[in-house]
Image (tube, rainbow, N blue to C red; front, side, top):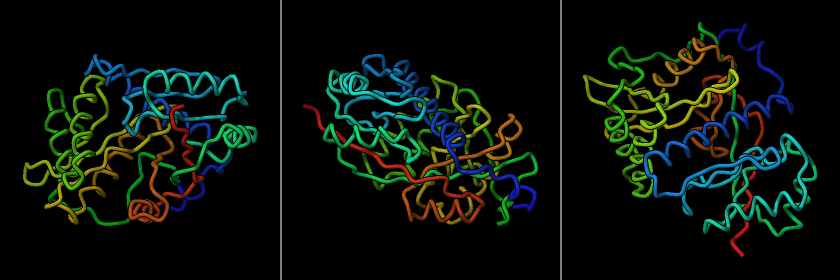
Length: 278
């Protein structure tokens, strides 16, 4: 990463946190809309309550939760009643992904209402430009591109195979391909000698690019496919006018280490809060 880019890191403050949390919220809202189009009987929908984005993608879906809780305005008990009713009435527990820069009243209300913290995630970011280039060498045998019309099933097959060790996630990734097709999402493929070996996806909002959908076929790992996909997506996002790339990872995970190795910094660590259905 070039020194000029290092100097352009925005401060990890409330303004940046609002940008990042909104981008992830919009990305998940788009996913839920795609689910509703691809699977009309799923009941998938999202709503916005007191500045919070609430997603329902099925009772057991990892997407069924809120984003940006307390980020854009303080919440009241009445707001929580409305949010909890949105999930409970659809047969789902309540999960809130909470940024540490949320309004201070958020934490007090979560405790008062009986929520328990269950998970942490690191939100990472870095500046990008059209000249962005990762310092690690990229294999000349890999071809990376945005998929074309009619290729979503091929993308889904590769994404599903990359998570084949975990059957539930593999099924979810395959469905994701059909959902991505309905929303004409930004999906990217890495190919080796014409064979699809890795996938990536991206959401763009307010000049921020959210990187997700990373999956690599087990037999094709350690060949630099995800590095090539990361490099390609960052440049693609910059060409669309983005100046920040973001991603989320488990604290201390290999994904976080790889991201930091390529210029990402931790903006903050979120806590996921859970309230079982009454």
